[in-house]
Length: 230
Image 1 (cartoon, rainbow, N blue to C red):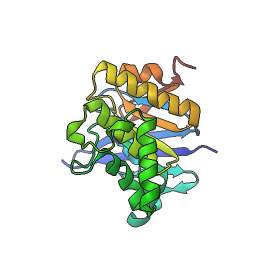
Image 2 (image 1 turned 90 degrees about the vertical axis):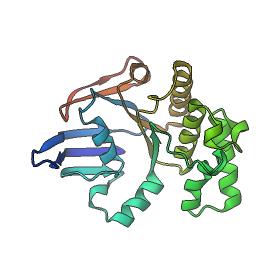
Image 3 (image 1 turned 135 degrees about the horizontal axis):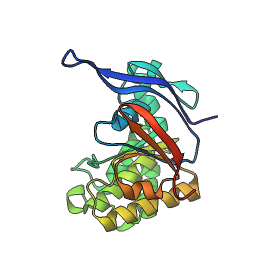
């Protein structure tokens, strides 16, 4: 069974009385363990699509099914709980809490899950080590480079033991070396631990590492093909 299944998905914005079809009838299945890039030009609908996969935005029409659960039908509190238990997020702007250390940022998601303090602190440090910044646990975000902050973001996304990770333009604010290091790290996690990664991106460096490339144009899928690593 697909980990994600999308059926006839639509998102229409009508803020100026002129309907904008950001997503216009998408059908897609994503299997466990995929390393997939959702690509397309600015305004193509890829970020809106990713937000609906993560339950951050509600579809106007259609279905988003995660492990058999129709998340578009969940009430607000249930949706929040579902996201907490099933989906990890990596954002372009990192979205770390500035007053917390790297370890505390990673542990915070587990605190929401009611994981005991000792256990969440241990796992937070293990995740920081696995992302190559185990020595930065007591640093606050403002004391870290962009690449280091994004590694904290990835560690945080993994902390909840999600079914899959959604990464929205994760390399947009990184230099070439930080981008290469980050993508190599995520590709290794995908290969070794079968963690499912889904990227929204226009970065060719991400596409070069993706094993599946889904192109969205004008809110529709225009192509769905294997990446160069397949």
